[in-house]
Length: 84
Ligand code: SF4
Ligand code: SF4
Image (cartoon, rainbow, N blue to C red; front, top):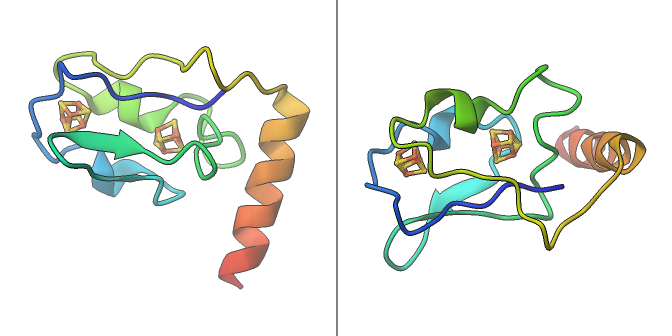
């Protein structure tokens, strides 16, 4: 399951550099997560790093993007291979 940034975001810029997959970027009004790049931090960290640092807790799991741990790990493998 990818994560989602809600409109409670205050554009504090804290989460964007913490994402190991470069999935977070500034959107039209507030930050957004590319679900094709978000692995819930699987492969990099035990916990979603953006959730850990967000001061207003506006990064829930996105119910529209349900993925198993195996699918998330496969996404991590593809993303990592693309960087090499
Ligand atoms: Fe990036 Fe991890 Fe947050 Fe997904 S959960 S957006 S991979 S920091
Ligand atoms: Fe928005 Fe939270 Fe990211 Fe700050 S850490 S930019 S409030 S989503």
